[in-house]
Image 1 (cartoon, rainbow, N blue to C red):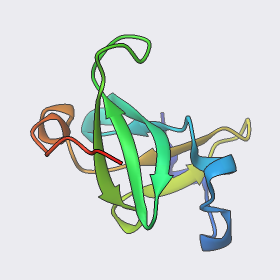
Image 2 (tube, helix red, strand yellow; image 1 turned 30 degrees about the vertical axis):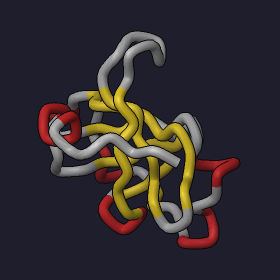
Image 3 (cartoon, one colour; image 1 turned 180 degrees about the horizontal axis):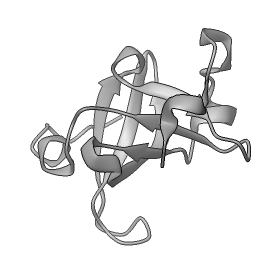
Length: 94
């Protein structure tokens, strides 16, 4: 997917209603996780698992993800992290 033409989200759009469920893409456009929920200034990403079962939640700051909307209006984010790097992070607990 070519993200260069996708519209970046404004800071006012970084809300749970908009971000929850967004797909996270890593290097080489690999799907590496999805947004589970927001926790303060952090985004909790579910990494790994299948259909949410066995996924590991990890937290990163919102500023570490580039959120955008594609031509169909679907919200997603891009990061330089790989799935393995996210899996190596400490598990997030609310």
